[in-house]
Length: 475
Image (tube, rainbow, N blue to C red; front, side, top):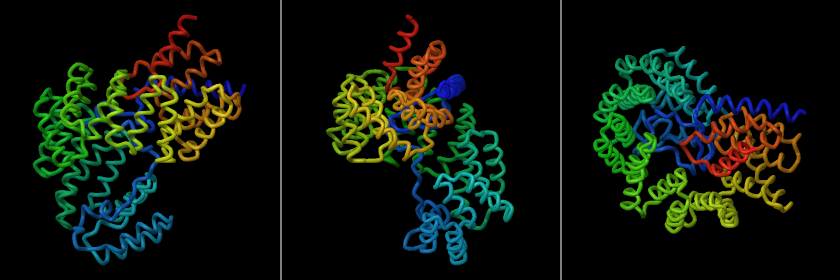
């Protein structure tokens, strides 16, 4: 009975979530994307889990305020180390010493707030920024950091107000020319991001052109300008900007791959395919281009071609976890379970904490008739919830494995945790399967229809979801 109540709450959470926003998924853990976000391409389907912390560096903390060439900042390095060790007060003391020695550095609370942001402690960062505003309301950077947090939290109106608040303060700021220029750029980039999110492309274009004029060597400025030009039906101009961006940063996607993703978002699949094929033809030796094309083919359900391209990626980078994982996912979707298991095992030998490999191994092995395989499935699922205790997918997978093993009482807690967060399409499918098993046929059908309606992102178990929906509707 308790499990049924837990499942009922999870069903309600799932249906509310499906109705509210589009579910997307990747080979990394869940990232729900804003459809108007200015990204050139979506995060890699094989990206890091969002739980992974950013690594603070001297450059990240103060590089926008002072020159780092031919100069060391040992106090900043010591502050970073103290912070990593959990000694926040000690970190602040070293920041104070650094500020006394190098007056052009940002205010201490701002630098410490950046450390909290990098550690994904948003509340800690917010508290410090409030202290900074109270101490010196004329320094613009506190408002810019607060605006960034608001924008990241989808509080767009709040972010806009903060960028507007910062702009005149930046104009008046005269304490550090290098820092002022950086903040001027951040105001332009932030205001443009608000316009981009709202689809106000002409307004965004004007701001992005200003950004490019101010900072012509910034690859992201050109990339975002390219997206905006595409939205204004200027695909040739967009291609030119993507080309400039990639010359400045070779880690960015091939220009035709960027166009391909944008055509995909516009549901223009013929042009999307032409663009991706052109990118692959021109750049078949670049692992990023090959991976991006393979992932796109997967998302389109072109599994045979995706396997050919993923095999080519493996030849280019045979020991790269991202390439091996992609090969395993393609194999799993093709029903080549032995090849998939071999690939996931190799990923975990190269990267023992790889969240997606652990997750998929658990889901692959739990379907086996072998008790040994089922026990291994639980170990993989438990490993992920230890590494990522609040992650929805990790917890839903663990709950599903426990459910399949008949340990329904133990499945309640991870099921509840999983329902609190952002669900991936694959996680939603697992819940729908449990619904169907528990006699919740109508709700299972509703959930499956909602999930299958989502076309963005990779849905590893899409075929199984379609088969289950067909089966339920035929009963």
